[in-house]
Amino acid sequence: MYYVLNSPVITGQGTYKYELITIGEAAAWLKSREWTSTVGYEETASVMSELFGIAIPVNRINIKMQSGDEALVFRLVKRLESALLKGSVSEEFIKNNFEIGVLQKLS
Image (cartoon, rainbow, N blue to C red; front, side, top):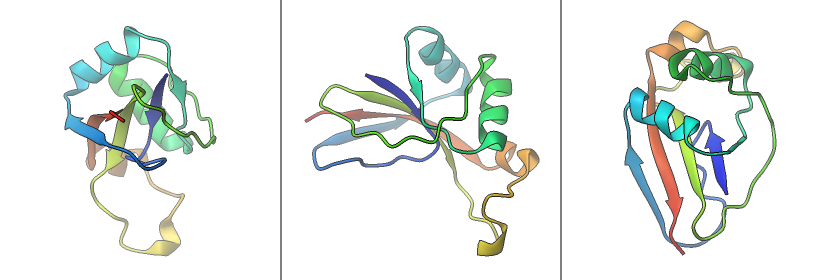
C-alpha cells in the first residue's frame, strides 16, 4: 500500500527507512501509483496540491503500515511559537518550513 502522510509516523514496530526527496521527485511518486491520503489539515493539503500539481484530499484516518508499504511524508520542520496556534497554521508558514521524504516499512 502507498500513503501520503503529514508527519513521519511510525505506525508499529519494525524496521523503517526514511529518505528526503525533492518536490519533483515527490510529484513523480504521487503520479506513478495509487495512494491513500492521511493528511489531516486543509492548509497542508492545499499547499501539497499546489506544489505537486495533483489534488491531495484531507482524510483524517489512522493507518498501520505493513512490510513493503511506502508513504510520502510532507513534514513541517519548524514548530509553531505557541501551542495555542496548533490547527491554525498559515499556508505561507507551511510553504517556508517543510521537508519531503519517503518512509518505507522494511520489516
